[in-house]
Image (cartoon, rainbow, N blue to C red; front, side):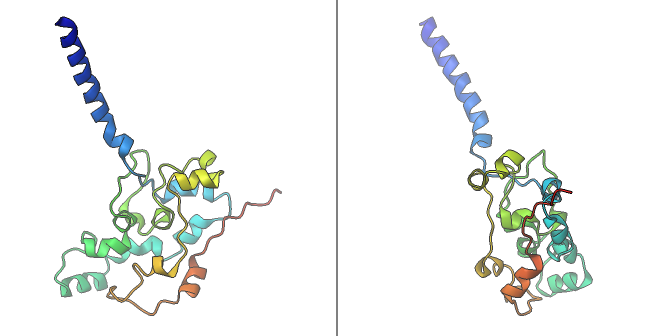
Length: 184
C-alpha cells in the first residue's frame, strides 16, 4: 500500500512538472526585436539601416500623428496606438497575431513594422550557427516573404491613407540583399 501511495505521489509530482514545462515547450517562435537582428546583419550588408530609413520603422510613430488621431476619431476609434484595427498593420507583434515576446529579446511595439514581420519571429533562428544553415533557420521559423499578396495584407484599400501600391517599385525601396563585406 505504501508503495502504491509513493508511486501515486511521484506521478502527481512528475505530472505537475511536465505541465509546468508544457507551455514553454509548446510555445511558438517568440519575437526578439529588430535590434537583435542588427547585431549580425550590420556586418553583412546593412539591411538594418535600410529598414531604419524606411517607413516601416516609423509605422508605430505614424499612429501618434494628428492625422492618425483624426482618422481614428472619424472611425469611432480610440487611441490609434492602442487600437487593434490600426496596430495590425503598424506593429510587428499585432501583424503576426500577437506571438509571445522573448524575455531576452529587445522587441517593443515602438519599432513599428520590424524585421520579424517579414522574416518571422526570431527566437529560434537568431543564433549565428543556425543562420549559417538556411534549412535550420527555416525550421526555426525564418521566412522571407516576397510577394505582392503578402504586402497587400496591409497595403490595400482598407487602409484609410491607401495610395496606389506598385509592388515592384515598393519592393525595390525596401529590398536588402545580404552581402558580406569584402575583406580589406
